[in-house]
View 1: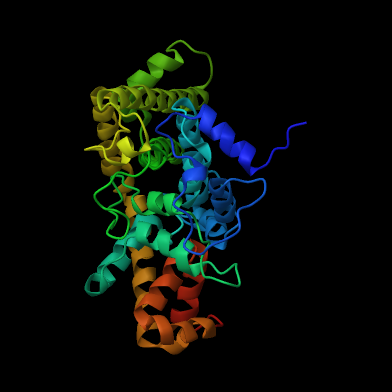
View 2: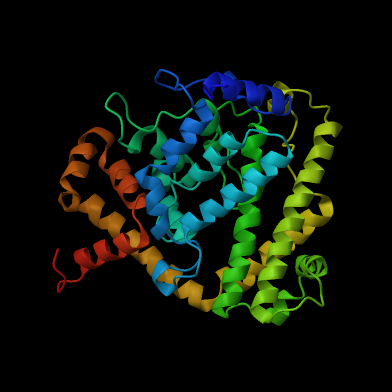
Length: 384
């Protein structure tokens, strides 16, 4: 009977994956040397280290669009991450890419997100304008490189170079990473490029779903979107089911349309640029993973619609104002009164500096912890 060990799994990768896929046997390695695992590849170890991290668990109580206490059925940053991982893995499988690396990057891509979503990130970026700003991809890398404490010999999770590169080079409409320390003139692996658009597929569609469920987005306005018409056509205009079932069916069809288009168009671009191996991917003049022009235009229209009708809706705006105040107040209190920080963070500030320590502390908070901490520090009637 064949033993399923690391060498066996690496051999399967070599034989079954596309010649331009990232192979775990060819990893550039980890910052700190570790003995290879007997029956797991290096990218599998990355994925499992991320899933078992505290930062990953905290995503359950971090905002996607709606604050967690507004309803149990809305997406959180954790469920968003799981949806990104599912979509990206399906795409990676169809393109014969390394699914383990794809999942590792997907699970890690939002670990550095602040409480209250992009509202919290904007405030920290503004407050840190004289200190290099704040960008959640950089913070995600800091989480896996420094802030997680799980091993006696080093800080962080000691992930492979490929997973870490995928984290820092994650780029969407909401992401503008600093790539200086990770070969800024080269493209990331296709496995990492997939995450960029799988992320957009996930948040565009689940935000659309949550917006409809909340009643903020009128169904009749959504139906005017070209991508919705495509989804209805795929789902079947005469399909049975009540309104809610039809909405879920159409959104499911839109996700299928986008993923299928991404696979088909990316394969065409791989051929167009004569990509034969991994080096051809990293040396390509532009990213290879992309939508077709028609689908790209339709997704851009969806993003604009969500920005104008959901993210800027008065209900969301009111929560955004409160969230920004919470983050701003916490930062001011911690930096002006360092003795309000937990003792271990006060000790850290002697080494890392007060600004960075306060930033790390706030960025790692869940929504509910930030709200509780703010109340303790600003409401005289609340016990500290």
